[in-house]
Length: 160
Image (cartoon, rainbow, N blue to C red; front, side, top):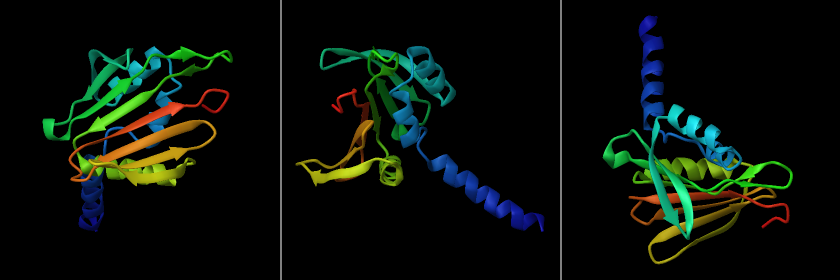
């Protein structure tokens, strides 16, 4: 009897070990966290802060996962902007070299409350754009599935 219990448990361990470090919902939640909450959350998920990176003249905090180099994940957390209602709003970008991570995130996005409003491609990648009244998300996956990104941001009060 114990053998029958052990097999599903081992399979569950293998499935969970292959998944990306953060979920689509968690990336959406990061957009409204303050700096301390973001830092603590990502450290608890196994990321380490590497410093900052400038993107479009904005300073982003850079975090890397503790996975092997071929499965490395990077999260760039943009500057938090305090809204008039007191909430914090920030852009978040997720990068990975593992196609299965992006496939998992794409599946999660399709099951989320966001609606797929655009699916297309450019010269190098497939592009998926999701939207609802609170968030916008763009997932880009290279054709060879060797890398890709997910950009999420909250909309402001005007829906921009």
